[in-house]
Image 1 (cartoon, rainbow, N blue to C red):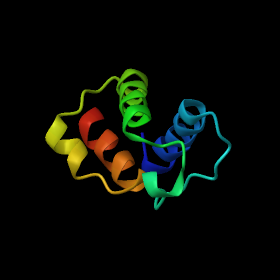
Image 2 (tube, rainbow, N blue to C red; image 1 turned 120 degrees about the horizontal axis):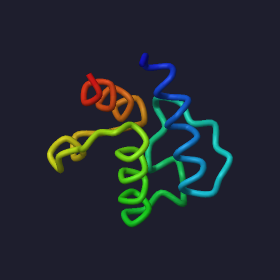
Image 3 (tube, helix red, strand yellow; image 1 turned 60 degrees about the vertical axis):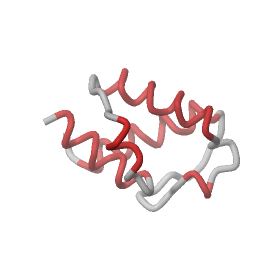
Length: 79
């Protein structure tokens, strides 16, 4: 799985989770999407874990700045 494939999937997961139609790119962050709050962030992480078959540690999630960082972490965890 390459980063572009992960980004397409993350875009779909984000738009579904927040019930929006946003053009998600690598630099997209919670600050860009009004619906992305602390509660919906937990739902997003849960859906990512389920879809990609990975588990994230709390420390890993604290360092994420944007969707590109999320994609990189998914690839690292899935390897």
